[in-house]
Image (cartoon, rainbow, N blue to C red):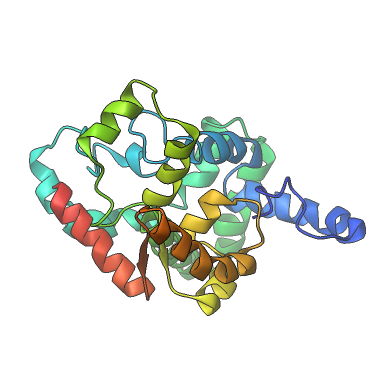
Length: 256
């Protein structure tokens, strides 16, 4: 949300100036280097959601994971719904490495990550300290990646061949683009899930209004769903995260 709002999340200039360096350090050390996030997320993901040759999120997991019809099906994809969880513990550990070697992040942040996650725990607690840090990284990877993955992969998010043809020859209108943002995303949970997880559960409303504060997404969702129903726009939602995960794995099964 901070990046979607231009880097500032408070109305107070004092709070922004005091806390933005802290957020930048956290993002650059453990998360996605902000300049790279701006390009890969705002432009490539939000403008080209689920497009096989552009979106760096789920489409980029191929050939390990096959999600879309235009991707060639390989023999091992029939097992992808089973081996998917085994890939997740490494998902957030790759960010500091990608920041340095792929996104041009300053080496100081990578050095800080190594020091805080491995050198310091080893110095204070030996091998046990490093193992605990690796466990935290692994659990964080499972938690974060599942919450992102279910946002744009669901058994009901199948696209029509006619729509794919229009996208392929760049004939999408503004209305088509907005329909894409809605029909290529899902919602799960309600207000409390939004409050706890920062709005990641309401991807439909987030893709329509990315800079809106997360709690407002939960207030917007019921009326927005009625609007979609009125205009025959598919609105996919699950009452809980666990049902969203189930439909995500069903999509993996269907695609394999």
